[in-house]
Image (cartoon, rainbow, N blue to C red; front, side):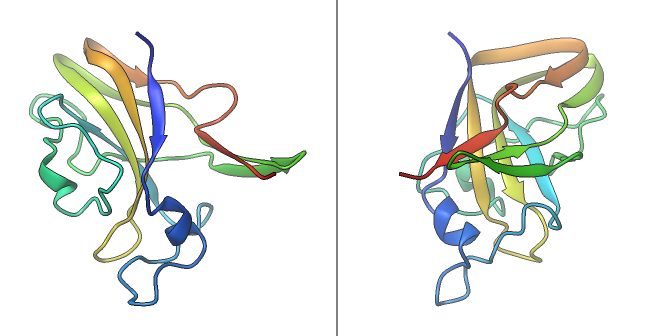
Length: 151
C-alpha cells in the first residue's frame, strides 16, 4: 500500500483568512514557518483535527537517539504555482538522521508561525509503519505536496 495524502477540514478556512473568532489564523505559505512532524501509528489523524498544539492524542515520534526534534522540521524551498486552474504547493524533501531508528506512520504538515493554535494543513498516511536506521527520508511527489484545482 502506498502513501495517501489528506487535507484537514479547516485547511481552506485557514488558507483564506481564518474564522471570525480569530481561533484559526491566516496561513501564508511562503512567509510562515511550515513544518512537517512525524507521528506513530498509535492514533491516526482525523479530518476534524485543527491544531498541532496538543496533536489531538497523536503520538509524535520520539527524538531520543535521532536528529528528530519535537515539532518536526521546517520545510525549505517552498513554492506556490498556478497553471491551468491548478495551484500547487511544493517544498524540498525532508529527512532525519537516526542511528537507532525512526518508526513513523503519519506525517503532518502545519503552520508553526502562530504562538498558539498552529493550524494543521495536510497529513500523509504512509500506509504502514515506516522504519529506518540511518536516514529517514520523506520525498514529496513530483506533482507537489498538495494541489487545489478550481472548476
